[in-house]
Length: 219
Image 1: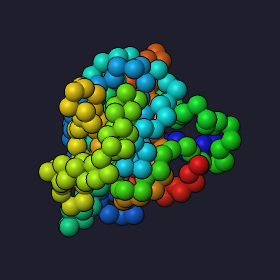
Image 2: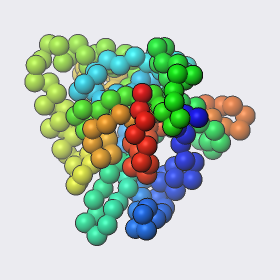
Image 3: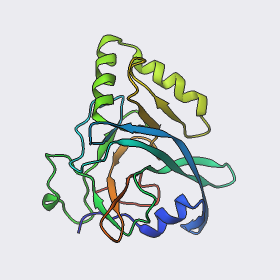
């Protein structure tokens, strides 16, 4: 069976609750960090510095502007803060089931036990975007060799040891935006999932940064 989200962990994280991990308390804060514009009917996720124009997920998304929130795990007396989950809220209905978010070239039948598809992070950052924004971001990065530093500098405005985020428009002439956030412990390979209500209505897209999991079987 492929890796599955722990519904209890997600519920606790986004309700700003707490739990024990290895006998030590982990407290959560839920923060809304922006609204993502969707115009193309699709969503994508990636490390924007590594893959500024990632392939979209196969799941169709109604056009709209959707809230994006992060669940921050706070560890120990040092208050080390890490983004455990990032979520695009597509409906206010409660999620009762999760399906792995896939691109066209990903076949879940190929996964081994606890395996998953996800996106690679090599710059400590994940993001959500409409593919329209991805095209604008890739074009801007092609034109401006140091453009990534502009985004990094802007992310510093929300920095707190050790997380940050940013709602950013790659082109000032276009409303398309990307919403970036620190990726858990940093670099790695992280899965995303679409959440559905009891009646099968699409509710959310969520990335799990594996803060509460020892799983390493990424594909």
